[in-house]
Amino acid sequence: MVPRNGGTGTLEMPSQVYADGGTFTMTLMEVPSILLRRPADLWAEATLRTDSRRASLLLFAIAMAGFTIYGAVLGISNGPIQAVASAAKLPALFLLTMAISFPVLHVLNLLFGGQQKASELTLITLIALAATATILVAFAPISLFFLVTGSGYSFYRLLNVAILGIASIIGFRLFVKGCNGLDKQVPETDALAPNRKGLLRTWVLLVAFVGCQLSWTMRPFFGAPDLEFSVFRKQEGNFYQSVGRAIYDVFGGEAVSKGLEASRNYPD
Image (cartoon, rainbow, N blue to C red; front, top):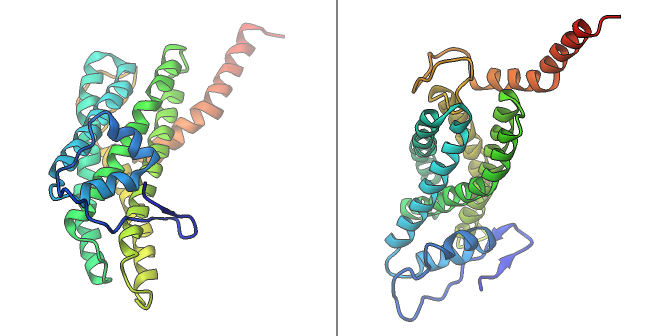
């Protein structure tokens, strides 16, 4: 069991090296539960053994499988073709977001004296992505429930944007904790340590902005019911305007429309 530092919010990494020096031993079925319950154990098992490639492959497989499943859930609201397209695009969205943002993190980490190697940052990133995908799969039945009960396109879109946001926040909290755990190896006299913590938070915000804009570029993921299927839409507007319209439709526009319709059907 890996001890947790309750005062600093970091994950304490065990210092002992495994005596057998063997390979990563956790199975595919064990990894998701450990991701959410004891992520530091997963990190330790993956890094303190001689071969971490199997751990990386398992985490990558879990992340891609989870994103594929949830992508299909997003697209099924507009039919099987959209479901297949969204199942392919959601994993691509997360991978492209990280590919665009990761070089900035690595370079700034070096400039500010960070202790994390590129391979360690990659493994922490895979842990965060796998955790995010696992949470999305857990939310999939709730999303499908509201789809089946006829909640409406705008509500369904807004619900799933919220689910994606919650899962991403939890995943990247694990990322920040993992990086802070590695930073525990830095001497307390290191004056740049507070700057690195601020850097991590800033980078997470950058990832959020990149992901939101990239999701708009790669749309549709849901598929508007009044539009024909297409793999990509014409570039106009932005992600935030779309969310704003969905909020208006759910909490304002649809209510106003229903009120007007009721007044016509039941005149004074």
